[in-house]
Length: 136
Image 1 (cartoon, rainbow, N blue to C red):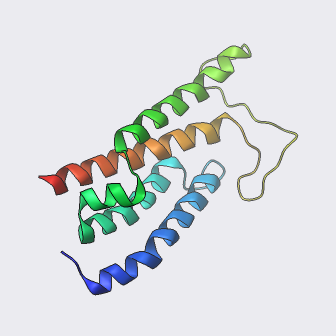
Image 2 (image 1 turned 180 degrees about the vertical axis):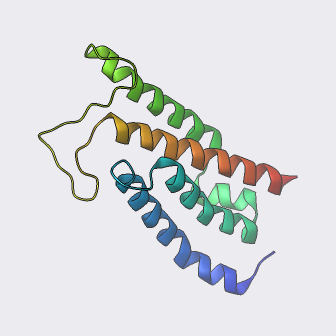
């Protein structure tokens, strides 16, 4: 399918979906949102592109490798759980840098690292499912 309306809309929607997903990601550990919802929103833009142009062109255009995204997401989530073990806390204990405050995000720490891992994992999983279905 190659719709002129969808082709035009996608050029505007993909950047908007990505900005909104990053907003949800960085806002999420202090308020509703987070890695899961942000990953779904991010993959929505690429799903629309795949519907219009196909999975092969979408992978080539954006350099998407869903398996790599899934692996990096799992790695970050595990690292966020292991960092507290290094400082003598229990696995998955939240640790924050109290000296730094970043607008929108707040204080960085292991919860945001975990959320970024979930973000990559969810986006990679959804893209893998969409690409697999499209290629069938």
